Length: 365
Image 1 (spheres, rainbow, N blue to C red):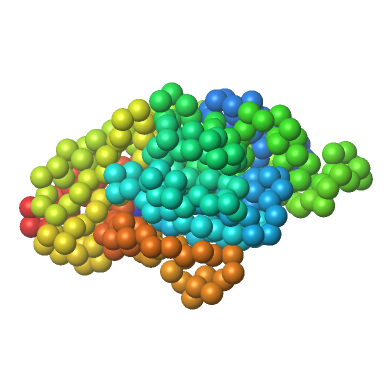
Image 2: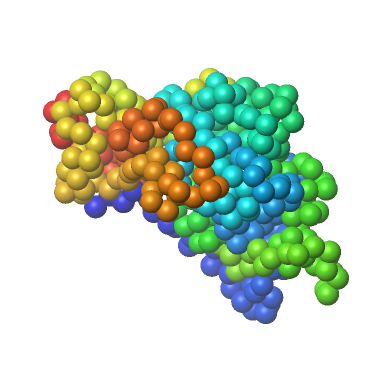
């Protein structure tokens, strides 16, 4: 079986052993070292490490001091952590439909969703490509909105030379399947000195110094053990991203003429880091998305459906007072058609050939 993703953290062993020998296994100097390296990758002054990507989103909303009923406009096509974080922070989620071209929020739909209670715009940079920040950032500024980027899948991605996480508050996941992983963990990036300071206090039980409490805080800390796993990956992020890009290029070349299959695009001014290579299986394809997924699995090609439904289309959210559902026809269509194929850096040329060949075989191309 060619897996949809591969976790390789073997390079972390020396740093992990260094932490174990030091006896400092909670948040300490290794976390600071990781934060400094991550800030450089994101092109910002501050990176605040936390214990998950969800925590990064929750903490970012919390330091913006929203009041009950204040709204966050975000994408309906995302992992549920995006929505859960908004609700956990006490805000209300409103949704703007996506564009099929990049799977991210459509700026026109965002503009239509902004209302008198809107306080935050939270675009989701999906699959490794950033949303249209040339329109979204000015839209947030002109409406007096805070900008929180859900960049969980987009470490190292850029738009017109600006890195993901550099527009306001950037939220990254370090979960095991991400391009950079610490097993569990997250990072918040920003150039705002005041917000960075508040986030560091918030993550440490509200303490600026030991027993000096300034706010009602939380334990959002990352450990030195986790940071030690991530540092070597940051050091080789550029080469790993280049391999993902080569694999994506080979997949697109091999699948270019398959009837009914829409391939992912790299849009103008954007650098795609290919967290996922996601195709759309249209109605004119030989089989539908679910059948293609099942047959690929049978033939030894791992794949994933990210995501099978609109994020708020579950019983637990339908009557939730913090969820304002909306008409999102593009998202509904994409959720029925999206299928991710392996693109990770551990693929061999033979693996890529098998992925291409198997897809073509199943779709009769």
